[in-house]
Image (cartoon, rainbow, N blue to C red):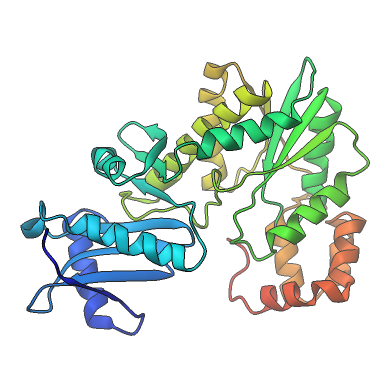
Length: 348
């Protein structure tokens, strides 16, 4: 095995980042927009011959120069990244890779969770990670003829979200409500979860769940080896549906409710994919028209924009009292400050 130095690459190291971009391009991938650590391996002439990065507990943007493949360099890069992740307290790790690279990462101790042919493989370094997650969900198994589900980010929880939950709860015996726990939204997960539960506590047939590491937001889904935005959205939709199908089987879910959003490319592709694929797995997909106020759909984006503009009084007709009262409280000040500091709050 060849031995070269591996170094952390800093954001202001333009030369090294350019070399990394060139190396990734040779492998038909690009530097992901979501990275919090990047390393590179240099040869004796200070050329970058291998690289890898992390974002939270996922490994990303892994590549070795063609002229050095077969020398065990990727093994060293992955070992370095795993050691780095462990050093910051992250031991349950994930990676997304091309189908052709899956076997290599299996040899490095990663296990397949979901494999979408010709698109993406989702892997983790814990052999029973996903099965443990499913077994934990089964502890909330509840009997019923019609068992529905909703997955929502609720960034933050609005009257539109509440309407969707109320509709699903009223039309089914049990509703399994999953809150996206990936903490990349402007409103932190702890707050989002609290507002969802407080805004639906009048409904008595709901089981609440966290999505954990298995369903992530579109804001942090890896895009570095997808050819364009459509391919990224399709990959995430297919991956999420495969994961959801396994979850549905564990909880006997036979319906999934989703909100209609005609102006969103991401949501439209997601919904169309679900309408096609969920029935193939004996799961009905119910698309619900969005709740409106003054002829405009109620959206979390609109709510965030109002908060950014400082017009909290305008929230009254768009969010439940529980959400409104939270944003008037001292507890909400850090969240409001974060929203107001953003240049754009519409697409988060």
